[in-house]
Length: 152
Image 1 (cartoon, rainbow, N blue to C red):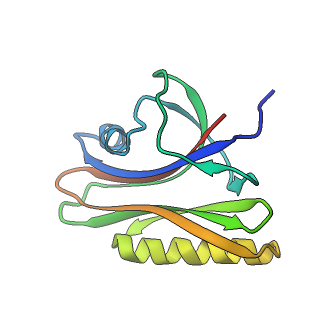
Image 2 (image 1 turned 30 degrees about the vertical axis):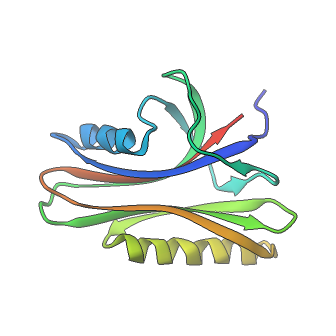
């Protein structure tokens, strides 16, 4: 049985590769999470969760994560990925992810608005928003990722 996560890390990274998959792997390495196995989950932030730096982990550890990922084969194209944590005062929160061809600044603005809307439709008061975002200018095949990784 899975337990409610007690901690979360938010990271972002980018990379280049000969294929989309190796570019994705390089982006994960840049973000410091390449040696994990992810279970992609939906976007609810448990109440009382603590934001932490990536802890030491055993390679191959299975972890729940919410992530945005974008890859491109177009040299010169700018790609961006963002993940936002929306904390509600005294309750649970939300996680939103966004990726696009464009700037990190634009991706961050959009993901912040997504967090605000997701909290509003749940009638949860906004406490704090934290964002991890990156952008990458493609050289041959590039990838940008932003992730929220849950820890027990």
